[in-house]
Each structure stands twice: as C-alpha cells, then as structure tokens.
Length: 113
Length: 112
Image (cartoon, rainbow over all chains, first blue to last red; front, side, top):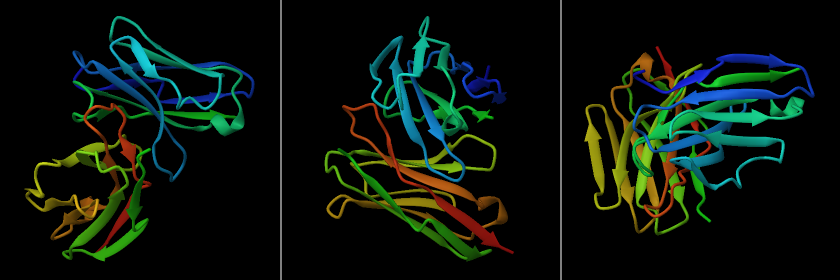
C-alpha cells in the first residue's frame, strides 16, 4: 500500500481479554514505532523496531504489553488481560531509518469496557 | 534524558493572522527537529523539519527557526486558514538515537 496501514481501526473489548493490533509499514522502511495516545494528550512512546529487532522495550507500560515484528515488515502489538486504562489510540509509524520522516497510520482506537 | 516542552497548549488566532508555537529542548546533542500536524481522527503528519546545521527553513506559509544556543525552536504559520486548525507537535532527537522526544502538543484554532 501507499501508506502505513493499521488494523483494526476500532476495537472494543471486555476487560481481561487479550487484543492484538496490527501494523503494516511502508514497504522498505526499516524503522517501526508504536505509540499510545490518550484522548487530547501527546504521544507516549512504546517500542521501536529496527528490522526485526527491538533495541528498546522500556516504553512498554507493563509486562501485559508485547510486540513483535517479522520479516522486517508487519508488526503486532499484543495487550494481554486488558484493563480500562489501556483504552487509547495506538499509533504505528515507519521510516526509512531513524531520524528521517516518520509516516503514521490512522491508528487503532481501543476501548476496554 | 532529553525533555521537550511546548507552548502554548492552546492557541486561538484570527483567520489571516500569524501563529507561533515554541518548543524548548534539554539535550544540547539534539540535532533533528520535526514538526507534525495531527487532524482529528488521523495520525500525525510531518509538515516541516530542521536539522541543527541550519537556523531557519521555510516552506510556503510555514517556517521553522532554530536557536541552538538557547535550545529552542519555533513553528511560524503566516496567513492562517481554517484548514490550519489542528494539533501541532514538535519533537527532537539525536542522530545516534532512534527515539524522537515529543512535545505535549498545541491545539491551534483558527477563528473565521
């Protein structure tokens, strides 16, 4: 595709359930980022991938959060045993390399009820 | 670590007037400073960026200035139009570090 694609666009889940969010970056982009954005707030960094490796996972809020990237392309962010405070928009971005323009997807709006 | 502060949090200007948003950063090694615009329901989009080897960059109605000594950079939008209404984020990073450090955002409102 022409841009970063995220799915689903919206997800409503019950507290305690697991969810999986998907990001398809722009083809050829080696860097991939996950951010979380609460309503009316700024961007909270979660994790960064360079290829399939995640040099820094310190942004993940708790051990319920995990992410992987395969084949240097698609990435999935998994949240286990979701809590209401996990409700937010999860944004994915990709770039050719670090410190170059990051292209964002539309985000996945997660609502935990 | 790096910290980026952004002001104001909300800015309301009359259509046709100029808008200025300011950011300060803490790490003097920072050398890349992008500005992103986020419209409602969309992801942020890069509108302009500047690297530390220049002091100013302009693209039509948008300009960014950088003062390395004072460690601050600003976004200037001239002749504002209704479609400029959005949330604007500044960020800073060091070339040896992958991570962009983001400001908290400025909600820009253009009054007709």
